Length: 320
Image 1: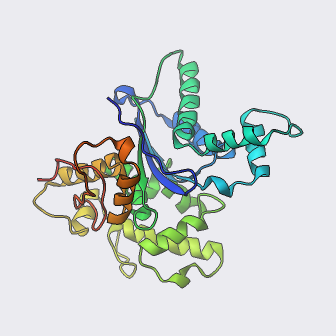
Image 2: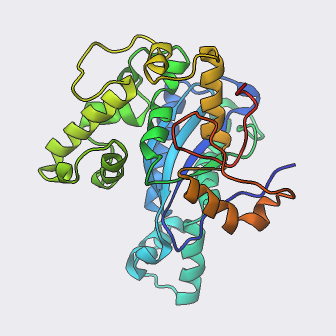
Image 3: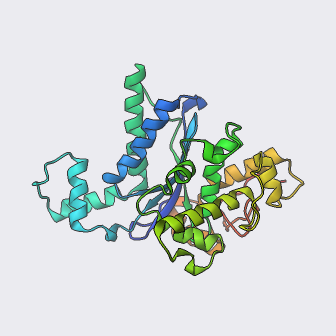
């Protein structure tokens, strides 16, 4: 039985780690499929209210870090533009305020945002392959992310998927990921500076780090993020780590678990944690979503030591 989806209120900015897998774990994402899925993922930003901050598209699943802005941030004019694009109306057509407010709530809903690009991809794939029926194995997983302390960790988790899968030694060498795009183009989106402000905080960089021209700032932050991925300080410019196993050893992970188990703990923690962040952030989610969560027993933020000082709402038995 599915648990009701946990969402933050539309009046506050929220970040979600989104994950879904193809039914039966089938490896249907070839180059053409990955390219089209990526197109739908980003094109949806023109009609819905969301920003893709990071993503990776694997052969049988995908991950995306998505921000839903405060609903009040969008002006009436911008809302009307999205209305016209969504319903494919002529620019001259106006709309009443009541209808627009209903539409405002709709395009800020993470369930409708993700459902839209998944459904459109399924329709395209089925037509292309002369098939019918659902393509994704079930409801997508959505984990609420604390932007103040967990954005870099979620981006690292997303970026290292191809390395964990054994199909890339260097994350930048895997084409269908936000990290590879940033390394190749300098930034993923026009407003990339906004996500940099979160990374600066989490990576422990000075506040004046953001002072300077965009290109210089972005180059510096992605260099630092690269060091973060490789388990180095910014002063250590050694060669890349050959495997994710070596990376985790550098991260001072407890040695009583074999590496595959430690990695599975981190995977489950990232994708099944309901909410991820500081102890107070997770406690607030638990308090505000208590009725939806439907827990009969008392629950508290859990720190399974997948990342230091980062908590979630679910225990994971992989840890022994």
